[in-house]
Image (cartoon, rainbow, N blue to C red; front, top):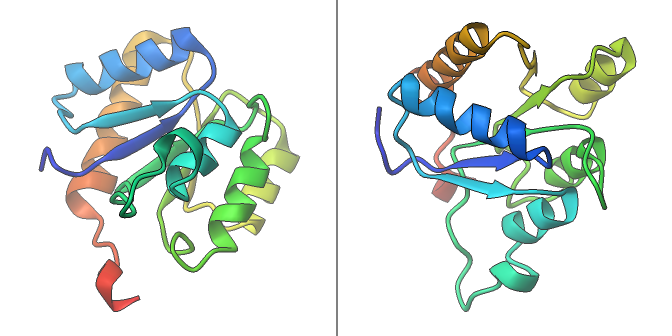
Length: 149
């Protein structure tokens, strides 16, 4: 898989963050993973605000892996803002959460999530899920040309 394709991981649980990074490594997903730990940080990163502000906008990630239960700004609100902004509205967003609430599934898709994945509890299942995730979103999926948007 191409290494230069950036993944944005929005995850407040340090154990889940480490598990995700280990699973990617074990699955040979060697892409750069930018980790932010709450919804406000995710929005700052995506919209070049606060600590992530630079003279020129940085590149958008290839895919956002978004937890729902986040401090400061919850994942559904992050998703809502991503879809409401021209720069990010076509950005692939995969909800990666432990939530088993049907309303979270429905609301995620209603707000424009591209996929909803429940985090497997078993490590080997998690590695398998990470492998599939990486293969699909980083190797098989054809995103729209961002310059053409």
